[in-house]
Amino acid sequence: MTTIHPVILSGGSGTRLWPLSRAALPKQLLPLASDRSLLQDTVGRLADMPEMAPPLMVCNVEHRFMIAEQMRQIGTQPRAIVLEPVGRNTAPAIAVAALMLSRDDPDALMLVLPADHLIGDVAAFHDAIRTAAQAAQNGHLATFGIVAATPETGYGYIRRGAPLADTAGAHEVAAFVEKPDLATAQQYVDSGDYFWNSGMFLFRASDFLKELQALRPDILAASRASLEAAKPDLDFVRLDPAEFEACPSESVDYAVMEHTRRAAMVPADMEWNDIGAWSALWEVAEKDEAGNAARGDVMLENAQNNFIRAESRMVAMLGVSDLVVVETADVVLVANKDQVQDVKKLVDRLKAEKRCEHLVHKQVYRPWGWYEGIDEGERFQVKRIMVKPGEKLSLQMHHHRAEHWIVVSGTARVTRDEHVELLTENQSTYIPLGTTHRLENPGKIDLHMIEVQSGSYLGEDDIVRFEDIYKRS
Image: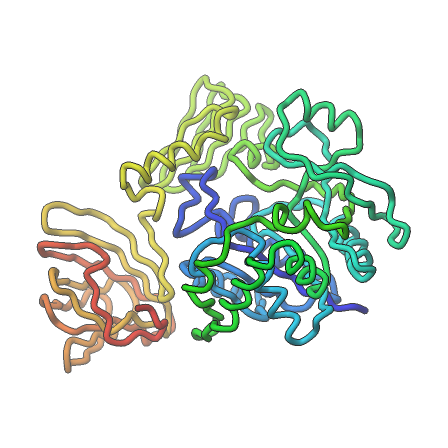
């Protein structure tokens, strides 16, 4: 049995699923279609394939602790978690993974998967992987073409060529086609020769690197340089920032697949969805008899074909149809289902106006737990803080604010300069401005606290770290 090495690409930001998906917590880390995140489902659907090795993950450096924690939750120990200092699209990410795998086995089979897709028919997915693996062993660069059931204008297409002589069930690629207009997409579907481009691939590391060397040696050289200068960071591999930033930003389709003569396509009918917009989630979600897909505290009356997600309070809808309503603690999105592809325009406006709602939720995750803003005003801010058992914040100091901590539940070990004390439920302490301090949870249960900040500046960047077990600067 030939080993297959999953390479999970988790660098996207998922702006079309705003306001739930944000830069600090993108869609692949969210439980959108099940009780597990899309990333966890991506890894989990490979668990029943004995030929699968532990996954190699390539992700945004800011998401590293959340990804490590989500893998721990499902009992997966990745081969490596590679940290990209900046996004450079899929070709450099795959190149780095191929270079890492080829250190042990130049002909290692790589299964490249985005972290944020849904697949309903897992058995069909496994069958397609095994067909693609056979094609890859025969020297092809295999991609997965999804049977096009509807004329989608948001996907690129692959035109099927002749069957491969050396691999049953796989075909040559006649052409990669850009996203079409509706009439052209309908012609593609009617012909039966066009398949949705899934963005999933399977090939030998050596074959991919040879094609990249021939077609885009600049990408390969920059990727190799960033890996050779990489540094270990706890359980992560941190690519060299300067070398990786110098790498051209290019998709693997444009860099390799559209130009190589080795491309092959495995047709697959596996209930695939890339969750590119809220309407896509409505399509795959369980619905009531009126066509409404609701999650959270939702009340509906005379409402049809709506998608509703309530995160923090009740959402009531009366006499409306074909809407998407997504409620979070700080934002409510209301849109027509046929307009949700334009959610990215709202995110672009938030960026242009230098607002923060596209970056973080009110509850912000940290490697030690999370904090959530409760109230703020002139010279004060109130937060809820949760610290996981055994975790600790950095030893730090603030130039512009003092803090008052109140323990709600659990046990806190508090360091203030040279003084260390234990606090339990309903006890509190005061951290004067300029005091070196640290908060730890030495207990077996989560520590919950209220923090009241006061001072002339309350931004998160007013932190001077002297020591940090997570090696943050």
